[in-house]
Image (cartoon, rainbow, N blue to C red; front, side, top):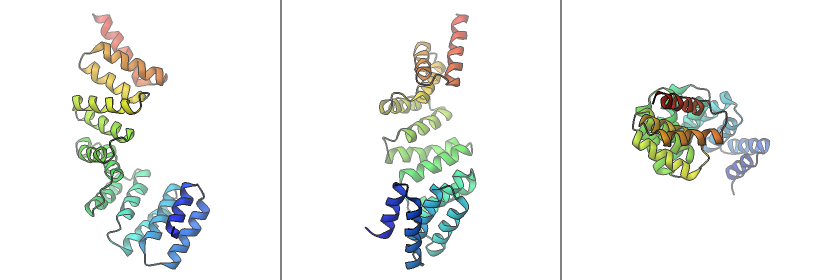
Length: 220
């Protein structure tokens, strides 16, 4: 196990000071290699030291213009600070240079969601779930974006997949309730709203959905 691997293991064990010491040694021993800077940047990102993390990722890119992991790390630095234009640019750069990983597609998709560009987000979230089909958060966000783009049949299928992975996912139940309500399938809509509220009694949106159904029933 080389020093970079040891440092990553320290991060996983929450031994951050030890990780910092190891990555510092890596950089001192190999100052022209980007990997040490990338790993130190990831540590600082984990600790929410965004300004320092940014400088380490930029140093890695200065050393290697095609350091894919540095662009990805930089994207996360900006995303965490809601600097979505820069996050988008960094994630796109990582992908254009050849990073074919579910996480980078997912983060680019979520960045575009935060920029109110759901249609542009769809293909990236689709790619994320193709690469990682059993990640419930990726599936849920993909389903949500499908729903936002009015692809309700496809969204329903995805939310049902989320529930197959995690049957207590209150937001998946809520969104299935909304889709069924939109399709005037009142009985199924009410069941999903009830499930969302059972799992999360303070689910305000599901409670509002129930009120809508009650209003609908009173009109009949």
